[in-house]
Length: 214
Length: 110
Image (cartoon, rainbow over all chains, first blue to last red; front, side, top):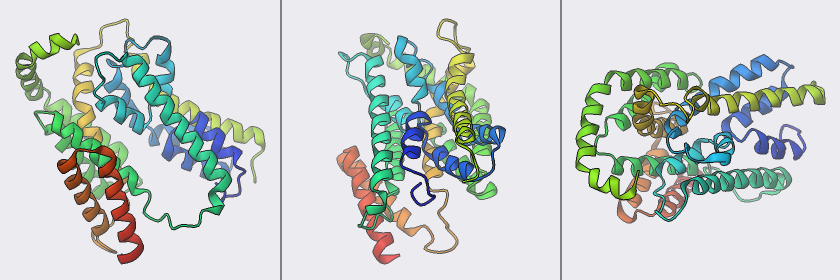
């Protein structure tokens, strides 16, 4: 945002209130263009459509969070979702507070980083080219963690395969919505088979489940 | 800048509204008090695996396999991340190792 001529207040306030990485970069372009609020809303809905999947996946986990729930939902970004979905929470820790602090720390680091970047961004001397790979590496690790936990890899493989296919067909700027659509359709199509597998799995793991009380 | 401060605030407000909508919609449609439809419960269980795959591809969307460096730095670094993670199972080590490897590759070799 320094480069685009905004004062450091912009990234600071935007990271605090929007709290969604890719869309904040889109917002910079929106602010540089002409005033068009409905277009801003439409673009945001498209770019952030993947959050719908996060919400559906967290319905159960966030159920008992009480007053913290609105904040948990507000802070449900890619990273918060990935950590809160895959984390193994120790028995003696309250899940609601665990989710709350993961969200709060993510939010805090994000705002802190935006403030630092806004104030000192122009002073950075060392070559940061390639640093963005930290995101890729994190999602690869989370994908692996999820892979090692599941007995059936159909959904993981569908996610990778259909996303690649849609990226190839629609290109980097258009592929997210078709990818989500095809993933949704494919998972709907294989529901019977997957649920049968799941039932067999839970029968086997019933003792363990009763023990943890979930 | 072309926009007034008020117009800027409205634009950012719209982005906030859109973001919160996408995050809150499932919770509004399927409130905790009522039983969630079986189909949505099923989606909640199977979607995450697919979504993590989608996020990996999303991070790599600008890689060009057919031209430039053919995505070799990404391929090598991801292989290292996977290798490190299968070996030590230390999240931070795998992420840091892969990132340093990638930075060295794109800054010196490619």
